[in-house]
Length: 260
Image (cartoon, rainbow, N blue to C red; front, side, top):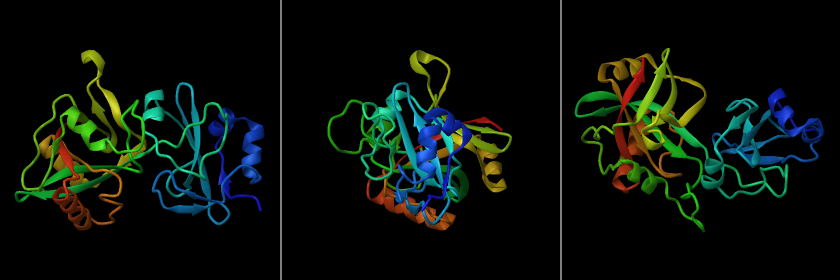
């Protein structure tokens, strides 16, 4: 049975007509898969599925996502990101070039919400990767996500009683009322570069945007995979943050606002 796959023109241009046609015919695609966006199971025989091609300098990874989560697209990443921030999986990558294929990249999930601290609402971003983040060049399994962020200046958060300190050099890019990126200092003191960038600008609520403009900063909290989850309401998000903090699995910082 043909899979219900969406292969965009830009993905087809990268992988070629022959490979795209094989995918659409179900010859070289998974039946079931884990969505590269939300990490919940999907079935390309039962629901519309997007092909998402991650491209580095030398390697390429074809992954799959629910069409309701992501459109079919090409995502350019650095080779270091592709090689260093990977999660070993089976069943949802396609062998484009056997000598170059690598496991699927762990994607950073970002959730926006208002967090009440000391009686005042603050705009917050909660970052949780879809898989373990391994230090570039490291050998073996493990998760270095929080240690890597602490090395960048983020502070461990044991309870959400106080606003974390400002991390200078980092910022949150908000343009035309939409969230575009989290920026980090550029190499050798150069222009800031994107630590995380939205595939498409993310909408935020009027309340979140108003709080960001009021404070001129956004609180960023980060936790390793499996600590927070996808919470549909801000009260549930707060409960998950409190639990992660109590378990020693949360870091945070206040990032200045870039844009409006």
